Image (cartoon, rainbow, N blue to C red):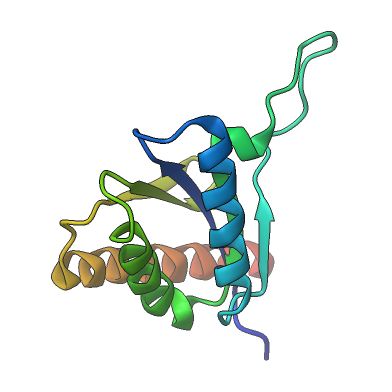
Length: 141
């Protein structure tokens, strides 16, 4: 039996960085996350652009998409918290899409406590369990 996966979107904000510095930070973060127990780490793109629209480089936006198994969520959030501490003012926004129209979000500033991380992980895992249960019920019908 394979474990369900979850997708996290990470948005990195470094108020004192220019786009080139943010790009460099994001690429370093991607490399470090790749070394962890994550199934996939890619630059996030919000989808197709309208015809004729000029594209925005997802790296400049500062976003990554992570695909991972729920058991590693706590480890990843603790890593992201430690990574946010490396630069003053750095904030990481984490978004988990739990169902079609439902998502939960967490901001990881340097002041985030371990208790806050645990609460968010519990909420994320509960939401994921609910979504898996609903999808099983859908398949039974």
